[in-house]
Length: 457
Image (cartoon, rainbow, N blue to C red):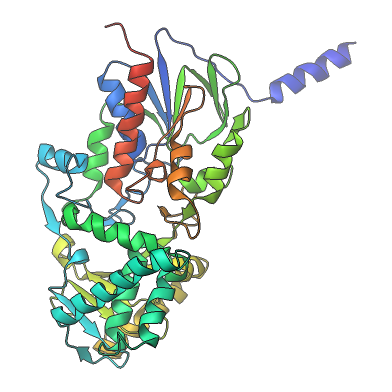
């Protein structure tokens, strides 16, 4: 009998010790300290609610990730406050509140952009040619949406080439426009539904320009996080909402809450890193599985000196247009000889698996074609691999080919039993993929919670 008791006692000691701390008053747990999680936590905290944020990584911000390891702030993830003329853009309000200085990005402008063919020769960039190409692609996409709605962007561009409506344009220019559209969608054109072109064109008419924050995008997330109860290095493994009180488990502790807001990236949900008890409803699981997750990465290079001139952005024609064709001059932001390339889609996914040495070698190939074989190697670099980043596992959601995005994203955003709430850019129906929309979804869920569980103040 004594042996049995000792064995039982030893078994109990080896089990995880969970400290269930219950406090008086309504308790809200937010899972994830990206901008959506910080937004909901900030709003509820300022409204008098007891809020704790559980963050799996060792830092806040999620895909807003300002890196200072090179001695100056570089954005590994989100780069821009998009749509600076959009009504009720909360990021613009915070920017004004903090007095942050910004730089208008060349993302949607063609001044200061240089174009090279695959031999390194400069191609004259004519505004009328650009407008003609964009108009014809847009018109073809609009017509195809009625005649053949299953078409993708690649189908549209290939059709226009076959019938000669793009024959006036050099291939380098067509590649540049093609790749720009793919980068904005974080996906290859064969996986891009034509409807997204029409929606983006309508959106861009009133959205305005994009701004980069001087001194680091993390100034905004740091501001939102002030005085919040945030527990870093605390990945959530299970959420049990089977009873009135919700139990949220981590590796070392469990928390009890009245409501939980799940703001983790779509990739984390798709990889089932969090167990739900009971299981999520089938419609919710289908939405998680079927929303398309895009992939975008950056290769950031610092050189001993600047050899590329003062152009804001340059594009180099390649055999594979996804392979380090699009480059940005970051000197104006960091006051250092830094350029970076953005890559997306399948090429980005493949490159994540390669070594740093391989990536740098591939990145230097087009630069040496244009600027000469004698240009120096970078003296420092940063390479992102968002698809492999623990607790991120992707860049941001994007439009899916032959799927009902409206239905899927609406379902993902729906709360469960008015106890488990969902926020994050993937839950935004109309503006997914943007930082301001991610923040808006957090504020949206905070509003729901305040309406459902008003405080008696």
